Image: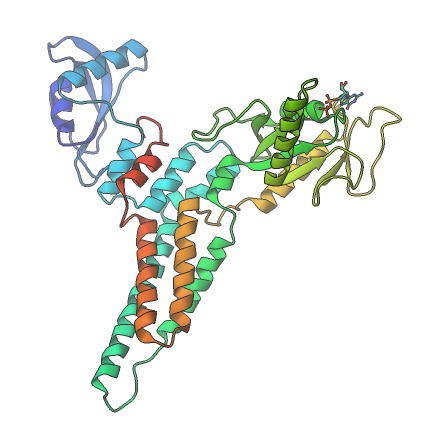
Length: 404
Ligand code: GDP
């Protein structure tokens, strides 16, 4: 429970307010005094709480009916259920966390693989936010230096002009931003690396698709907001997230029209792939594809040259090597632990900052340089959420689950 009524509600259900930040055992009763449960309760006074508001927790026994009865009792105290992500949203609005941390937290809560968790953890902890705040400071100091230089020019004074080291600081910060932009995005990490199985009919795509699914760990919860059809499966191999795509499912025998649509979609899938596993004739696949020779348990199945993987979906031969190769490619192409993976939204803002910093650092006209610095600061503010719109916050926090 969070908000000004949290304390009243806790006191009405449990008799007295416990001392803050100490776990206490309490009998929980509804407002008619009917006993509901014995529970551990916690009381946090704002602003030193998760949301920044008064917060209360009831750790009751986990039965569905017990929880429902306690919820009903809380409703009679005038409380309502929190919306998805509302606790985190309030923490953001009350300045407990910034938008960068909130976004990383949202992604971390839905992380299913070790790589996702490890990369997002440092951003959720605020390491990335501190760096962004430093860049913002650099821009502010540069703006101040530009103002000073403009004043000096206005007054037409004798003596030495104010120093222009600000240009070097901006260039240095811009270099750091460039390094962040070079890291694959958090969205890529969330969705998994797209691996597409391709090859002519009967080359063994569906069989290999199923064999890989059997070997890999299935990722259970599809990510909200992404559409998945039957031929896409999120999986984890060695802690790395993938989206495995079988183009065979796009081809329906018989109906020519459907066949054509299927082929067009297969081509679209190939274009979107991060890695294509090519099961057709050697060299006939798309550029950069990983050559896979299938059905190697059959003596007359064609073999491929060095660098190709030889697999049998029937016997499982070669599958561990194929999975190891996929995990290796995944680790190379997805963000690594210790790197900051930014979302699409943040990437746009960083792009703007990077461009504006470049303009300001090289602009001889101080008025124009100052304007570029202002734009850079605005983008960094948006990144941290110092300026944020309701729509954007709805979209971000709507991704969270209830109670987060
Ligand atoms: P797709 O059209 O490319 O999806 O190919 P399928 O996976 O449907 O395979 C075509 C045929 O080859 C099916 O009859 C499969 O049972 C068979 N097949 C696929 N993989 C293997 C394999 O590794 N070994 C053997 N012996 N047969 C296979």
